[in-house]
Image 1 (cartoon, rainbow, N blue to C red):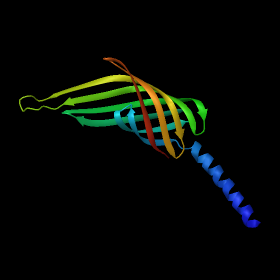
Image 2: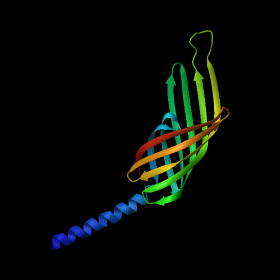
Image 3: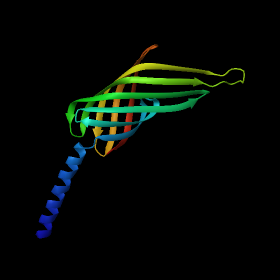
Image 4: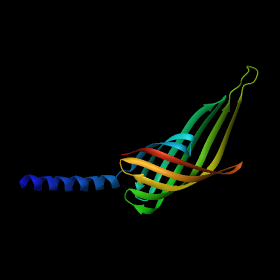
Length: 156
């Protein structure tokens, strides 16, 4: 009987600790597929308050003589949901640098940079594992482009 009571107390204490630590998981590191960074990205965010987070996603890839670098800082707001399940909205700029490498020695290549804006909305499951699914739009000098993506990571 004493062992059963002790086991119940330990289980209750550990679940209370798990609930407390879930709400205190303010840091997240993740990888993204088809997200703010383009085809893929890696990111980090920090939630100084329960309904607001600050983050950044970056990516780099080379394809057929072109090197693309992007950096997308954002502010996230959580208007709906509690605990582990929440809806979010993210807004921020996207900085992009494109280098076209020269196929011949006579031409040095070309470098261009650009600035756009990104608005993103989606769902987040935030336990020790972070899972996000979202739809977004990117606005730049070439127009508006719809996009969607997922993020998977860990929280600390």
